[in-house]
Length: 397
Image (cartoon, rainbow, N blue to C red; front, side, top):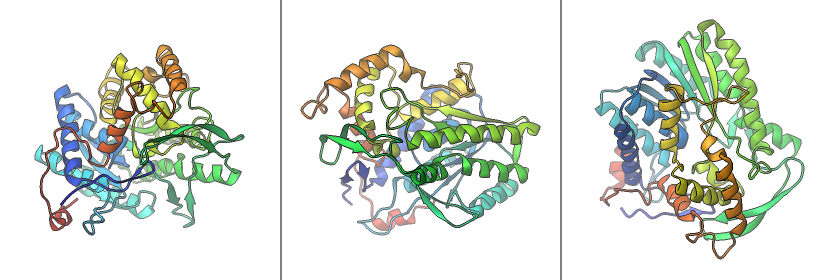
């Protein structure tokens, strides 16, 4: 089977399953090269199949020796023209590698927003997972959510709040640098975005787990956020996405109260800018990334999701290098926010145009490769192999 990369705008619509297998192995080898660390042993990751969630799972399993449960909603192969999603294969290849190391790696490929999924996970923890979890990671990224109580489906919007935002963007399909206008959201669109991407479902998960008595004493739950800088505040921090992230801060306080009697803690982790399926489609964000990555690569501080998540857990949460802000949020994004880094990024972005954005002046090549890696293309150490659709369909998650 011949795997070819196909992009529509900044969305990948094709996948190389064997490329994803190699990338999972690359990430596992990276973690092993860093050595082991003391961390949690029974972990639930909600949103575990790609980017932050997958990187977290790999670090905790192959760095800290954790057994993991992963919840995600992915699609398997149907034909040579429809091979499913990258996350489908990530789940499968992670599970195989973890089990070869003697670790438990259970995949629930279901709607994480539903009551049924929550109950299925709770039943598994009680009967097959030693009864308790000591870390719950909420890393779910979805554009739609159905409220399990009302059955109503909400759709999120990536929009400005107040005034329109005008700025440069990059279309990777056409390799084009262009000007985009981001229209302001309505009040309904703001509310819907908070409903989908805010902290409500995180709180529902923690309530369900607490009521079922499957949380260990001293349990930690983490939720990933992004605040950014003045260079992207107009369309991120001050937009609908920022409003959803602010809701997670509020829900963290509620969850902390919920967990107080078992010495638990809810921790917001403000991550750095990295290349993910979600970040690639945020208006203007690719331009910020190609500028930032150039500066941080030259400084030796640029990180991919696996590097970033491993540093968060190895060095900060379960290490001795934690940095917190006044709101109690963990701040591994301090390398991105470094004043000199931001000043150089601003200067570089101001020099970019349609003639030079994809030259050595910036880091378009790094951004494009990292984006391609997400679906199994341009993967280091990948060697082409022949595989049939029947063999792909036979893979078991």
